[in-house]
Image (cartoon, rainbow, N blue to C red; front, side, top):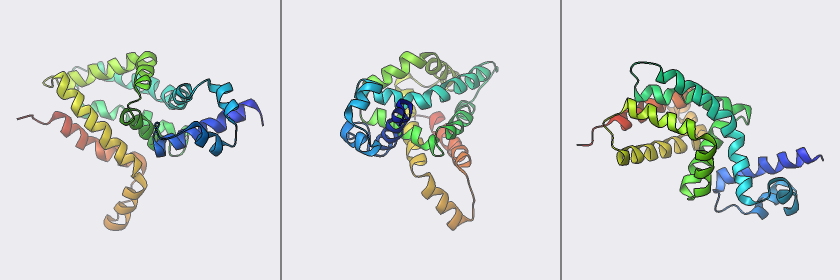
Length: 209
């Protein structure tokens, strides 16, 4: 097995375990057992557990963020924008993550949600440090689309939005089965994402009184 193969095996095992169990509840011992490698291999390729987490996330972020940024730049060039249009910018970059894994969109969102639920502050710092311009552009788009929201209200609504999306994608196979069996509706993953966007946009734009 080459060094590249070993590194790939560690990343593959780690990302699935992190997505399923969360960052805090996944030890390096569990990862090395799943990958069939020893702890020295993890230390050699990644240096630390935190660096392994960053590497797992960046395999998705490195593909997702540049495409999202292009979509947001195009949107900002329009004279008026809506929250739905902002969320629509996420669809194509998210679906492109199937190039990492067939279930790449769902795994990525589970990882992203896990970073918040497990209070992985270093991971948020990593995202801001490496992709801060994209995050700022997204914030600019949202503020233009929903100017009445205060910073605090925007925080809460984006938090609820992320939670909804993570849950939806984590249960995507079950939801698609229900739609097929109960409503004779054959929907793919992209269709599921597009179905939840109007709901999320309405929540973001809801009146507070």
